[in-house]
Length: 108
Image (cartoon, rainbow, N blue to C red):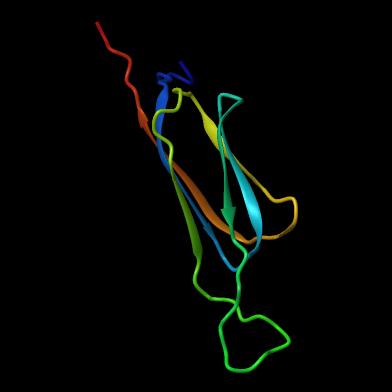
């Protein structure tokens, strides 16, 4: 029990991460109960717009880049979080969501 509420394990369903204009490869790790459950990458490097002239800079798309990942078949967990990092480049994280289902403990 946590402050009078029953703590139930969860089953991960999926993850969705949104980035603004970014220029990096990001590594995402889902940690559940302090254990690494899954790791994956998103390539956020942009190539810029194709124009008939060569500009001395790149034009970035104003739209967001969305990375989705299915997380079914992972071990159950009580709490989880995402660790998002990049070794090179820069990124602008807009939001991150992990969806999970509560596995209720059967009552007698």
